[in-house]
Picture 1 (cartoon, each protein chain N blue to C red):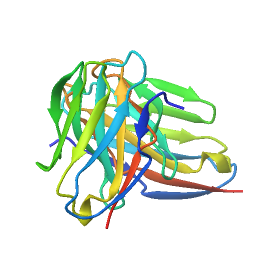
Picture 2: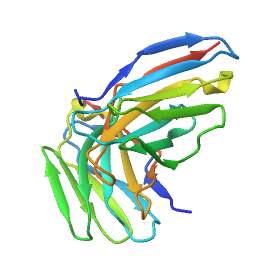
Picture 3: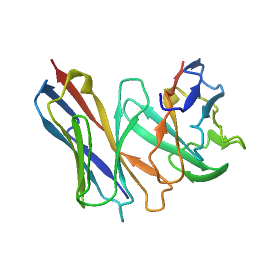
Picture 4: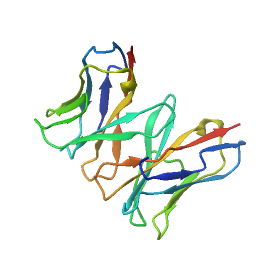
Length: 112
Length: 110
């Protein structure tokens, strides 16, 4: 157990819908990262937060947004969902920027 | 653009048959190289961080080494429970992003 929690574990929804994925980092970790992993794409960096502030964006679509709250938990919002958004979404946290990341168990999103 | 390349994509070993996995990188000014293990359907699990050429780290049957252009993950006398996908990652120079390789899927047969 990495100490990073993610909810829900599984999510099945229809195209065009909006979902919210939640992540609680390890106690004491200030940095949160979101990744998408699909079968043909590998682990793709989406976005990084540090102590409540957005720090970097990767290959994140405009339909996706995220935020980190004062208690340091983070949410990833996915809207206007498409079939191609089906993937595993991982949250990771680290003590500070540049340290090793600890990954949560992931949320498996299936868009039908 | 910074890139991380892992080879081979897949590796099948017999139990006890030692081998090495490769991770090559092209970042400007390495700020650390990270190895992870990922089991199917689970989140990656942190294994090692290496910061400078010549550095080595060990954990049970795994040993990671680093040169100026690549890193190796040596697996000595592997067991079936070592079967997993092994990922390496490097940060961008300012740590804004982490680039992950596509991984090496290791299968150890008893």
